[in-house]
Amino acid sequence: MSDSSPLPPVRLHSEAELARAALSTPLLERAARLARWAGPDTRVDAGGSLVEDQLPAAAGRLGLTGDDAAAYAAEAWRVALDSGLVEIADEESGTVRAGEALALLTGSPHEVLTVWLAALETVLADATVPDLDDLVDALEEGREIDFASLDWDPEAEAEFLDGVLGNLYLLTVSEDGAGDGPVPLPALAASMIVPDDMGEPTDDVLEQVSDAMMRLDDQFRTLEPIGLVEYRPVDEALMADADEELATPVEEADVSRYGMVCLTPLGAYGLRARLMEAGFEAPVVGELADKGADVLLDGTAAFGPSAALAETELWLSRHEPLAGARELLAAARGADAGGPLRRLRCQQALSLVGGEAEPALREVLDDPELGGLARVWLSERGAAEVPAPSQDLVFWLTIDTVAAQLAAEGNSEELQALVEGLAEQHSGFFAAAWRVEHPATADVLEAMGRLHPDKKVAKEARKAAFKARSQQGG
Image (cartoon, rainbow, N blue to C red):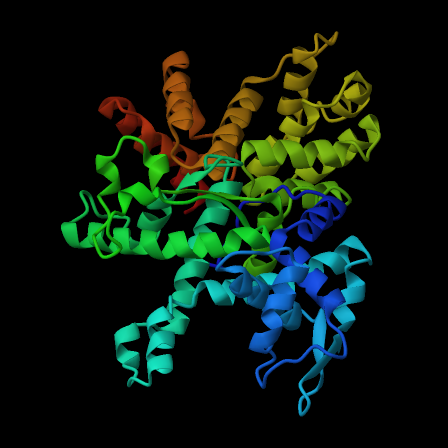
């Protein structure tokens, strides 16, 4: 992902809801219990880990049994230490005491989330560490360790996981993405491996995707207990032999057997915080609700329709209909490049306002930039005595509307249909359109020339664009 442009806005749950979710995550809950359990007799080694003979008691405190109980207890202790729930009291004796962060778990929702974010960083770091069972066995047996054989680059692993989580965030918050639904693990792996311009992936690329899926399977299993994701692991039946290459996902009808991952509301909060820290612009729906109408219209310019609607509804809920309509109309003016899209967002916002706003719309009927949308609004509500627009106003409004759609959607299918409709409904459209005194006239006509499938009509549009540029002195 590039940090040169803002990410789509995310809809976050309230901090109170997120804090409750954080406190109920298995890993933070275990870490907090161990922090409250630790006392003067608790001993740690030089690295801060519980000494081995204390792990059974820690596991018992957590109600853990089985072969992995000690490992889970050690993991919870590491989270407690790294997030400040416990701290080393005396390094020489290896004693511990409650950390300052422990009190934050009973504080404000923001304080709880601060602790959870610290715990998340620990788990993310753990998730990038490969399986070191062979290394441990070698140490216990006194064998020489071949570090090169581990094939582990910590920075590269962290960068890979960050990229995957960034793509998962994008798929979750984008309007045409997964939303609250799960994402197939093969798709996430492929998003990091397969080049965008590659048609049919090569066998080598497919093998890389399979290897990445196996890494991600382990990593998402590690990340689920901290509440970042909900994860359905890869079906064990697909891996009869750990060394056998995973079957190619596209050959299997039930893609869910290859793993499905979903970002939780808490996870969306956590990833946004990390993205912001990394320098990305990651807006949140609701951030503009207490700002001026100018900030609202400019801010929602890059939003998708659904997010723009939600943001606008929040803004309108804080304004009286008439006063809000007047503020929106005033903010929609302007001959700058962003003007058309501001007016489109204004028109969309006003469609949510009731009849109380009518005086504001009548006040701008003679405004050259706002008179067209005012007539549309009044006519749609069956208002009386709406003056008919002049031919010049109709053409100006048409150019403004197409310019706004270009800015909002680019060369979309919807815009192409609009262009075709305009050319079909108005036989002399291009002969008149190039004369329209609008800053975007030439750009709109050029776009119509690109988008119209009929070569003859497209040529007319390009000629009109040339005339418009000549008229503008460009």
